[in-house]
Image 1 (cartoon, rainbow, N blue to C red):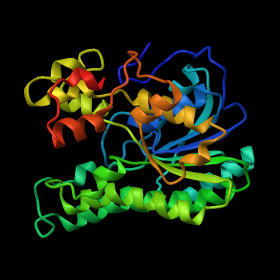
Image 2 (image 1 turned 60 degrees about the vertical axis):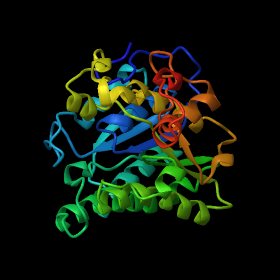
Image 3 (image 1 turned 45 degrees about the horizontal axis):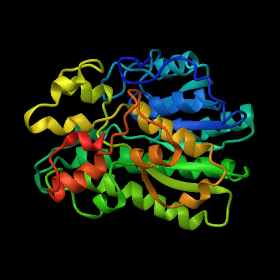
Image 4 (image 1 turned 90 degrees about the vertical axis):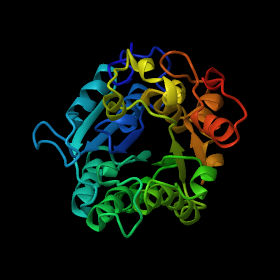
Length: 320
């Protein structure tokens, strides 16, 4: 069954295809990162789940109630193994200490998922760059770009010792969608979203010919804890929000959807063929035969392209 945040609980009887592998999910306190940590652990990987919000150290500046310790409890409840580690990925020394710990305890790192952000609180939608708070904008860049660079730079040397490692940059939007400026969201926010794809491009060039495969992965309209709270619904009542101008919320997805696809990708011996690509949750579902917790396969980015951009259809149900 699914928990309140869409994270699937219980032990999957399927083969544990990632047995013996070690994964680091950076930014696993909530949302997609939490679900990815759970699904990688369910598949057999030992997962290090990091975040800043902790029962011991208190909440991060995001000021949400979820903690990284809860993520560890969820992955254990799914039959997996792992450790919650409080890490601020803007601090290189903390990231070095984390990777040193992984090397000492495991001697390997097979999967790195960079899902760090939390800068939404600094977004000022509808403002021009000269109207936007500069300090908040720069903090957003620090949280959404610097963290990914610091973590990749620190973790890749350990990953290079393996024979088929996966480095995932979690992003928001397809390559085509992010090619255009996101009008109305502000320059800083747009830059964060576009930069992750560029990081993947650079990593792909620099890791060509090695054992590490970099890809970008994007969920669709994610029913994260924050999104559910924003609309005043729960995972059981989320359809109540899909009315009027929000009818498109019917193509939203739980965090488990993209997490299942990513776990399947990590177990694919031929994953190198996707190097440098941006894969959507729906594409991963089609490739690997996975679905969301309700058995559906939402395709938010096809909906955005065909309905919102081209006006081809108004039947939202076609995209689930």
